[in-house]
Image (cartoon, rainbow, N blue to C red):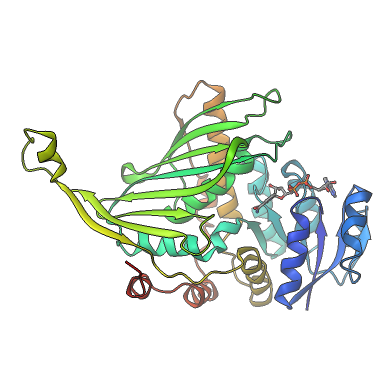
Length: 373
Ligand SMILES: NC(=O)c1ccc[n+]([C@@H]2O[C@H](COP(=O)([O-])OP(=O)(O)OC[C@H]3O[C@@H](n4cnc5c(N)ncnc54)[C@H](O)[C@@H]3O)[C@@H](O)[C@H]2O)c1
């Protein structure tokens, strides 16, 4: 049984405790928070976990294998650095850090001390997002033209990081995962309406190779909760809707066929629209946070590189830093470059990772065979 010390039990931390306990392969043996009210609110539910306001208690406990960090983003680096230095494996909530140099330091340190460093990019463990990746990788959608992400809600309003670093961090991790790459540049706009220098609404457009664009609209000032991704390909389009629990992905077999000649009328133009219907693939659902926790345990036990390791965390931070710089420079295009020394350390899918993917994702063709028209 892997023993975990959890730091930060505000809004998100309790979900992490529950998910680790559900795996039955790990137990949270310490709960740490600077705020005694937050600690006492959760301590009764998990009597096996010792509450503390002093992080040193976790570091000094030799029976603790790993530290999970769910504090505000600005505190991630210091806590992770101390945990790795004390020989603990580390799972950090997104974003891994608020500074790319700090992310690189953590990657270096984890390598030196030979410990797992994983970032909680929870959507990389969501079977419906994996199904979307299967659709892209299999060529089902054709060449990918562009992706459009919408993540809006009314609150929770943060004051420590902007909607870009809080909300769009998820979308950036998803786009990097789907494209299996770091974006090459970004242009972004954002406005601070409630708190100075904390953008509440952000519009950012990232570029990937081959002319692929990925646009993100993130806001905590929108009365409607929306979590949507549209992937437009040359053959088909896919729409992912996180709030549609039973049918999260719709595949539109519709496209504009290449025109041989300029049409005379609008109706002629309309005849070039290819209409093949709408498919709803059957996708096995999962509890993404539990799958993420299971993968962290698997990496510790089998010595694997995580799917969302330091490299994955770093490319998101680089993209967010560039988007922040673009917002400050009135939407100027800012390039994004993975430092050369980190590229060589790109986590290759270890055999165990591939097994995990095989186990939990079904092949696209199987899904299409089970579609409802
Ligand atoms: N994966 C997701 O979907 C998701 C959702 C929400 C939040 N998050 C992430 O989880 C993290 C926490 O977010 P939250 O919404 O729970 O924030 P929160 O403010 O509700 O809770 C953070 C807690 O950390 C405590 N804390 C702060 N500094 C600390 C320190 N140095 N040592 C110990 N405790 C400390 C605070 O007292 C608070 O109880 C953030 O990184 C956020 O981005 C992820």
